[in-house]
Image (cartoon, rainbow, N blue to C red; front, side, top):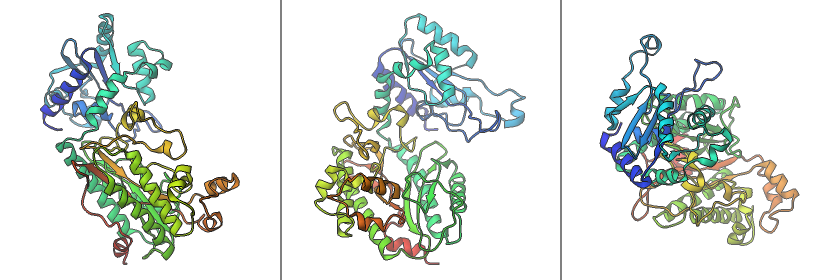
Amino acid sequence: MFPKDTYKHRRSILKNALGSGLIIFPGNGESSMNYKDNWYAFKQDSTFSYFTGITQIPDLYFVININDNDEILFGDNPTAEEMVWTGAKEPLESFAQKSGFSTVKSKSELSKYISSQIKKGQNVHYLSPYRAAQKIELSQLLNIPLGELENRKSVELIKAIVALRELKSPEELIEIEQAVNTTAAMHKFAMQYTRPGMSEMEIAGKLQAIAIAGGGNTSFPIILSKDGQYLHNHASTTILKDGDLVLCDCGAENVMGYAGDMTRTFPAGKRFSPVQKDIYNVVLHAHNTAIAALKPGIKFLDVHLLASKKLVEGLIDLKLMKGNADDAVTAGAHTLFFQCGLGHMMGLDTHDMENLGEEYVGYTPELKKSTVFGLKSLRLGKELKKDFVLTVEPGLYFNPYLIDERRAQGMYTDFVNYDAVEKFKTFGGVRVEEDLVITATGSIILGEPLAKTAEAIENLRSF
């Protein structure tokens, strides 16, 4: 945990922003795989962690009563019988002290407390729940039908939390960089270890071990595939062969829950083929151009469009596209090869605060999120501020199904050389991703340097 003053300061800002009312933060519970006591790895709700520092204890509620200036943790210490299975656990009172508040009550008292405050006319603030158990519990606590929970969430609370969490403090940056360094170690290992004849799962398993050994876990399920044209293609039993491209998108989460998220694409054999290197360099140039454009005040949407233009220019040079690059991007022709967004916020979540709503985290009332294919997947569009932490991850993806569909529909014929593209339907995909913090004048790449040029990657592949 951070020092208690960190959490007290965060809660003070939040209370001042809202002014009055009751704020309810449900912590996450254990989630069963296939029977009650066989659980998935526990992941605390990130907003609960942000305001309490409690990351490893399930089945808690934290309530802030602004009117009465009360901060109460509802939960139960394990019984002696429960500790037969778990071993000794630090009491909740100790966590409360470390977080800078003093009141701990049994979870059995939660419902009565909430009801009494509602009867007093307290305005209740809560976030949209994203787990089924949470939805049911909140529905019962607040006497709100399940179907109405989403409509009655507190937008005021969401906006106040986003304003706090989007700016990373120096102590948070230390934690994020620790997670990024473990992430970089995972990628370096992947690029050094991978050989033709290995399965994707074998490599992914080694990477997960590095994340766990770093004190946390993976920050999301590992994406590792020779079929990188499918954006979230997880590792399978597929055997790699010489000539394949391996796209590895993985990240580590440190013990405090802060995340890293990086991508490298490398040959399964020793070297990129000439065509693979050409495509890779197009992506890398777009990546570097986007990073050079980052600074406070620039819309990330504009950086996304700049990267898209650079991808198109590279494809025009390779005769896969034609015409004017600006016109191609305006027409959306680049989305035949770049279907997703350039990046996203990162912090206690890999896609930071995404559960709060992208319209609040990545956009503004003036800048609405697009509904157009490609742009609708851009999670961050608004102006950047100093101390934002985000990813930059352009890519080129040769999805045969999308190519066939768009060609059959007669789309983008002014910009796409479909006959040439036809030969790339088995190419795969390339992505390059870094994690960055926005500074007063630009940005800094987080973590230890990791091979990124084709030549540097091939040097790691010299076996």
